[in-house]
Length: 285
Image (cartoon, rainbow, N blue to C red; front, side):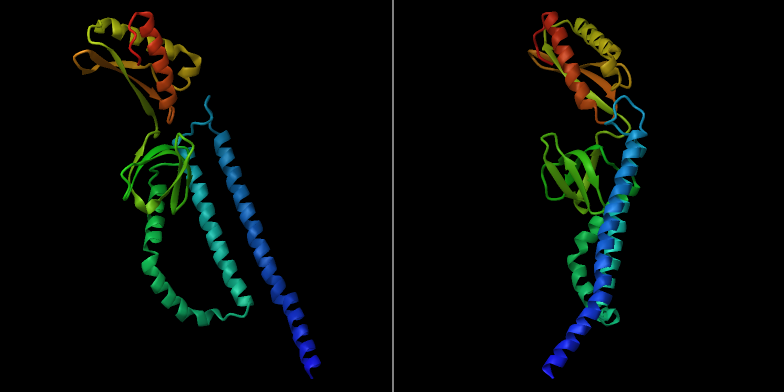
């Protein structure tokens, strides 16, 4: 009797493995393959976006390209979440769970989790508006004020989803910011950027001569092939910005491609310092 029962149980288990068990394995494997495929398609689309941007500097993307990068990331994330949810339901059904009987417990559990999931919902809604309003996109340089933090998060946007924004700061550190905790966003690379350079010189210096030196530096920088590809127009001298007893600051500004204000600023400071040194003004810009 025991042997017969064990044989019957083994036969039923074998039959289940060949039927529902095999279907569960196929569902899980299919979900994993679909995830790989979706990621492959997303990466290929973003590569085509990058290759379609005609510029001497391939690191700088147009506003439309940055927005499409962010959309590709978000759409892929949403599609995968839906697929995983549907596969999970099918796996539960094949394991013998009656999904109709889970409606009442799920409602109670959903109500309980609703209070704890408010922040997640807030993150998702905030992320939706960040994407649709094009506040920033993949590759933008941003400064983000975060709730409860005295120092803003600043860096280059590496990833944008409906829930989080991932930045990489100049030190190479990765910063993850929940979208629902973002208070203010300062986009440093939208459409164009500006490099502002304050040039300190002795208070006794001839302002007219200093202005002429700076104008000459700006003109030569705009003629340089490497810098001209980053500049939108010739750097200009704004004039006297600050004055103290023994020093005055003269401001020089340059409009640059998005995100390239830091590179242009460093290069202009080197050129200004060398030009002032040649004229006998040893103050460092």
